[in-house]
View 1 (cartoon, rainbow, N blue to C red):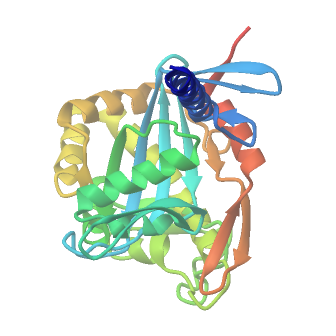
View 2: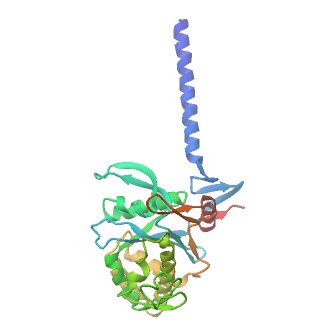
View 3: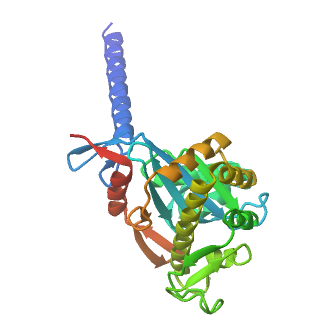
Length: 319
C-alpha cells in the first residue's frame, strides 16, 4: 500500500512538473525577445513603453531577380518594401540590401526543408521550388528579419520583364547619385541627369563592378534614384489618365510573379495618386554596415537601430 502511495505521489509530482514546464515554454515562446522587442508582433514593449502594431499598413515587397528566365531560380538583387498607410494616407519605402546577413530557410535539391540559417537575404529566393515559392520564402525571410511583421503582398520581376516595365513610362529622367558607372557611361557622372529608356535601364539599375568591395551599396543608390523617378512619373500618368495607366500596370504585372490582383492594382494606384510621399523623408535604408565576408560582401544589420526603425514605421505608442 505504501509503495502504491509513493508511486501515486510521484506520478502527481511528474504531472505537476510537466504542466509547469509546458507553461514556462509557452510563456517563453510568446515573450521571446530580440534586443528588447517581443516576438508577438501585435503588441510589443521596449524600455517599459508599450506599442501596438498599426493594422492600417499595407505592405508590398518588390523583388528584382537576377535571372532572365522565370523557370530559372536566380537571386533577389534588389528588394524594396513599400508601406501604404491607410490611416495617415502616406507611403514609406524601406530599401533592403541583398547582402544583409539574416535568417533564411534552406532546402536541399529535393526541396526537403533544412530549417533556418544565417545567410545573405538575396539567396532566400534561390531556394524556392518555383518563382512563386521563392517570392514567398523571401517574404518570410524579410518578415522574420523585421521581428515577424507580416509581409502580405509581393511582386518579383526578373530581367526579362525590365524593358516592359520601363516601357510603361517611356523615357525617364533620373538624377545620377554617384560616379559608379562613369567608366561605362561617361555622361552618367554624379549630379548629372541620365535619360533612361528600355535600351539602357538594365545598365543603370543592375550593373556593378563585382570585383569592387561593397559595389552593391552604390547600385542601391542608383536604384533609389530610379524608383523615385519612376514613382513620380507614374503618379503624373495616373493623374492624367488613371484607367489607361492602371491597364498598363496590370498588363505588365501579368508577366511577373505576384499575388496582387487587378482589383489590388486599382486600389494601390489610387493610394499612390492620393497619398503623400517625400523621396527623402519617406525613403529608409536598412541600418547597418558593409563588411568583407569570407567569400562575398556582407551587410551586418544594426539590430538596435533596426528595432527603433520597426517601431517608427509599424507601431503606435500606447498612451
